[in-house]
Image 1 (cartoon, rainbow, N blue to C red):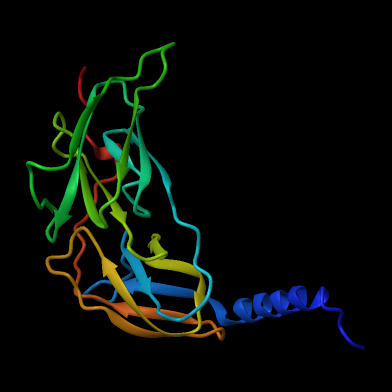
Image 2 (cartoon, helix red, strand yellow):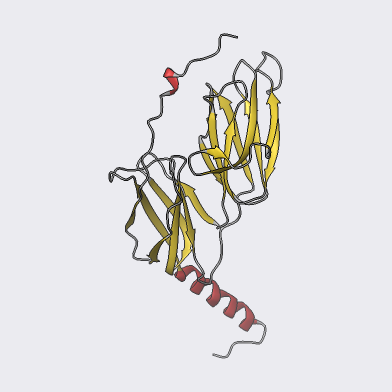
Length: 229
């Protein structure tokens, strides 16, 4: 049977869509620390030069200040994302943010952004503020009033990026099959690690990435000292 001229473009588009879907795979990665244990809160970034569709950029993120912490503690967004900060505590906070380097320090303390978020008040709207982040890299978040409060936002220069869970695992979806490389960032790393080559395949399976990172112990929320005001 011959296809009519009007049906050929639709047929070709359908075939291209099926081919693109067949080339994409889900990749599961587990990040390990220097002792071979799962590494939570690691940012995993995958770079691929293979053709195919890319995930939509992450242009919105909400971070709350609650129980003397930034929650989530680590998040990933795309360049140009708007991050909304909200104070859920019954005391005042600041949000101080800027690009950071290895060891969790501000690259330039004179740069970045800073603003105050008033305490939560009964019957009043929560204090919120929005900051747009454009430059790729890790941002350190802090509070002028409470030095123990720290959080992190990573602005990713690749569409495949995620934060590892308690088991050190991430799932990256829609990655083109073929060679790729993976980078890992963690707040406790002392130097930037070299990218590691991987092969993306539809066969699946867990890829384990060893790092030289030794994570510092984090206090449970219940052990955090709360202000008396």
